[in-house]
Length: 312
Image (cartoon, rainbow, N blue to C red; front, side, top):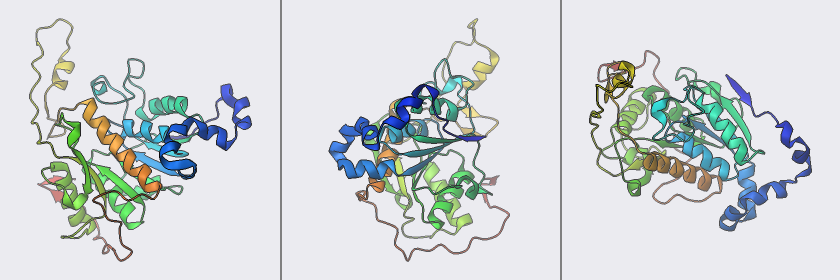
């Protein structure tokens, strides 16, 4: 499901009366950093955020609070009780509501003039171009699923769309160790390593050298999850709740990392910073712009490869 932001009847009279300059006054403190010309650039920009979990949800708020004029939100999932420790839209009143819709309602209260496009769907790695039904200036990748994540990165690189990707935010407690590097230069991050392997194997990314994909990482050593020792004989706990506490998901056959809001949110804020600075034409320290000579070879046909024996 997808929809464009409907006009609020409550604000309809004020909508036409307020000039562009009047709308931009709410971002006056940001203008003191980037000048009014920067505010105009952001107002005319379109940022797409794919994945609205612990990273993407906070990132979306920062993007809207930065005066970006058009924002596309993409996520298929709903708010659940185990999102409360890390995801911005998770409230008692939003459990069971789609994350995209819950975010839409909040973001409209921040800037009613922002054109918010909601796509309540999971991106399809076999048809990734479908989500790009209008021009996008910057993409923020906060996807967890490997195949879809790599398909989005590959599409943006091949179409010369600017993108930043977030990798391992789980298993960390220290937000001061967050950095922005090229995807080819990450270390000790299992998700980033799998992304590189998959991009090289399936999407023909270079074996050596830069990918020219800004990547938000943490230098903090990974903390392996432990099983929470909640009392199993409590009268108010159900078997389903107990099963959800197991750090190893038997269905997904992967480890469920511990997460902290002050880390995932800082990953999201860092992604937003990269997007805003790039739109403003600023250089990100330590990164290089993708040269015009950078070209990826033609991709091999299906079937898709496997990673460690598992279809990705």
